[in-house]
Length: 220
Image (tube, rainbow, N blue to C red; front, side):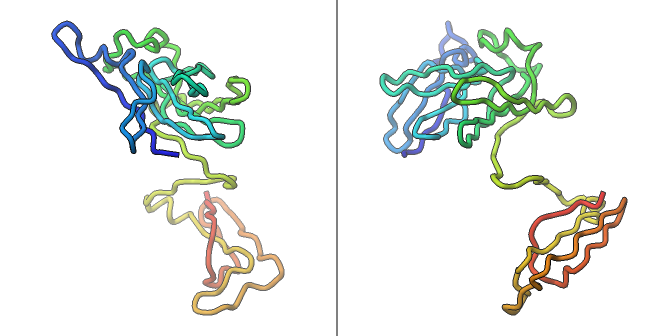
């Protein structure tokens, strides 16, 4: 598939302020050819190929849409309770980032602005077969905007640690069974490695022995 990009193209004149282009001034472009696939979108974001179809977010309406098989039309799949930005799909489900509208944003004429007081920040899970929102992770404080969503398939408890000294001092790594030792082909014993013992504060981790590591365990 070619590279697809969502864009907002605005026509500016004395009689048409720039911000009015947010309402229906968006389009979808095939980057290699420069051809416009469809127009008339309200603040499009995050076009994605999935399961042989082209999906994208129409942020100005808070909708997940899919391109029709013919005719260059977009069909609404789901309406979401936020400014939709950031889309990832796996199997029959889509995971969509939702944001609140900034108080300083000029959203005159944008359909989503009529629901400004109802919008949420978080990640919604949508069943692509029915268009139903089947789950919502909501940030109720501190976070008000999501810019992208990525899936870590097979990861059960991922964590972004950062470089804060207090966090690093309570973080430990444990080896995979059978990982080779540095500088040689020797493997860990066939018996399962002893588990990490976690306590409040520092957490002793046994049988690390300088072998290759994977995974991270927080000690607090």
